[in-house]
Image (cartoon, rainbow, N blue to C red; front, side, top):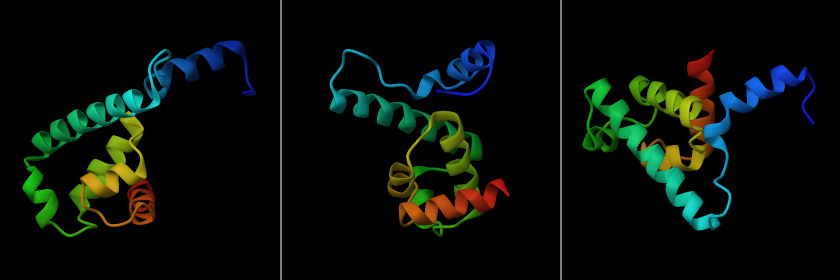
Length: 105
């Protein structure tokens, strides 16, 4: 149970509601929905950064703009480190975790 007032708990729940699984659907369907949401957010972030899917493959794993996008997607959508590593071509999930932490510092 979260420690804090009930108002604080409601505010936190509201802030993170987008990370919750949808009740009544199969696990694989929920995963597909999450991945679709993450993919759409990635395409939007690439457009804003003036980048393409090809630039994800061509740039080095720890490129600053990739780290910024990864950190933003992780924060806004809750995208997993595994998904970020695969879709941003950033190496291992542990590498992504470390690179995001460097960006946040």
